[in-house]
Image 1 (cartoon, one colour):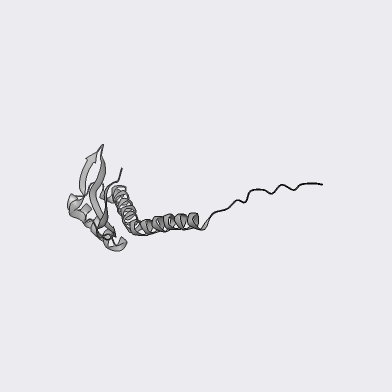
Image 2 (tube, rainbow, N blue to C red; image 1 turned 30 degrees about the vertical axis):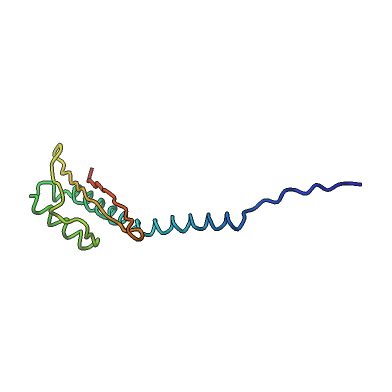
Length: 122
């Protein structure tokens, strides 16, 4: 007579499923809370790079560069920084723009996440 060996069942238990579900939900909530901050950072970075690489602004006054940023900020809906926050300098004949700012994102109850951003045209 042949004996059939049963393989050990593999899978996830209900407790394991609920723990992994909670972890995935927390990661998704964290991602949804942080995405707007990182999208705005990307918009600020794009604006700084575009202004610094614009040939018509290479010999412009700081006031004109700030006006250009203000116009781009309106179009890209940048609200966290304004043109007065931008540091403007020249390095090797090239304009370099940079800005440092912080974002406080409430997560839940009295828990918040504080993120420092540094965007530069370089």
